[in-house]
Amino acid sequence: MEFWKKNKWKIIIPVLIVLVLAAAFVLGDRTPAGEKPDAGTMQTQQPETAAPAEPLPDSLDPEPETPAEPAQSEPDTAEPSEEESSKPDAPEPSEEASAETTDTPDGAQEDAPEGYEWRDGMLVNVETGKDKYQTDPVPEGKPLPVEPEDVTVGDGEYTCTLSISCATILDNLELCDPEKVELVPEDGWILEPMTITFYEGESVFNVLQRTCKQQKIHMEFTNTPVYNSAYIEGIGNLYEFDVGNLSGWMYKVNDWFPNYGCSRYQLKDGDVIEWVYTCDLGYDVGGGYATGSE
Image 1 (cartoon, rainbow, N blue to C red):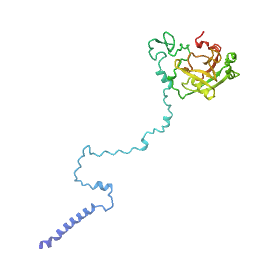
Image 2: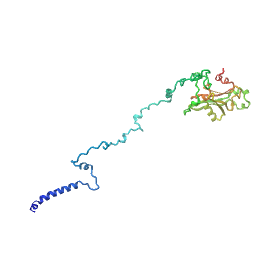
Image 3: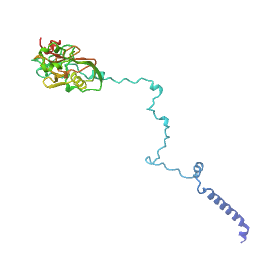
Image 4: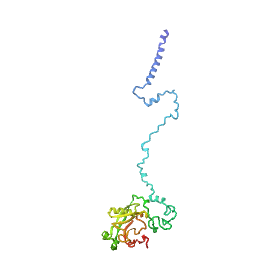
């Protein structure tokens, strides 16, 4: 007891100090409920003696955060800058240029089959001198026939001039079928020259057929496979042989009577088409040579 009396304060005071320090440490480490510690507090609460964290395996390492790219950093493809918009666009190859690089020269598209040869761009029979549709070689500088089955009509619009005349009948009324005389116009015009719109790839026959329908003009034809073309039998109810055995319809384009059917003549912009009635196998209209006669 003597020891306790003499030393109790020496024992109590250190114990109290230890308790106070312990209480202060415990209470100071707590955060009031409902409050979040700020970032600075969280960084300083880790004891200095804590062992350093071991590095995670590569597969578990957190991927480093990449800062979000600002919206303006994305390339603007919708609205080019003034400098870019002022630059001329690169020219695209034209259809004509493409055609020039892909087309082959006339007469070189394919090898001539046995018994045929190329003459002036046409494949003709060596013995007859005609193509497989009985057509003589086309005069130099004149358009070659184009087979209808090889044509695709396009959207391009062009114009030509079309007329239909039977004026020669007026000079041969004595040969005309009496029942047809009243069908012959006084001036000989069934259709006076008029401008017609046609489409890329169309033929003389296409234009005649459509125009007669639009103008309510009678027209009758028959397909002739041997010539690969339509043959015009009658226009305005005036038929072949109505004015003698040498009469019928002929056509010319730009003052030339083609030596092939109207379905095979592919039009070009500005062409002038004339359908004329002949009473003398073409000689009375300037086209006798088209029949092969002299």
